[in-house]
Length: 65
Image (cartoon, rainbow, N blue to C red):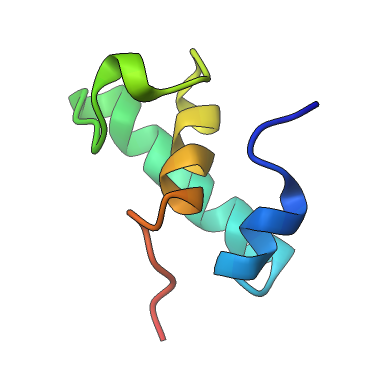
């Protein structure tokens, strides 16, 4: 099973398109500057996009309103 699930992520951010946009921007930030909001060993995913989705699921990244 994929973690985090799309259902859990859509509870945090209402739109699939906005979710993809936020996650991709955060993943690029991680690749460029190497800054992570969680400890390296707390992530389940090895790739930056999966890590960005985990940060969204944990409430570390919020939708701007």
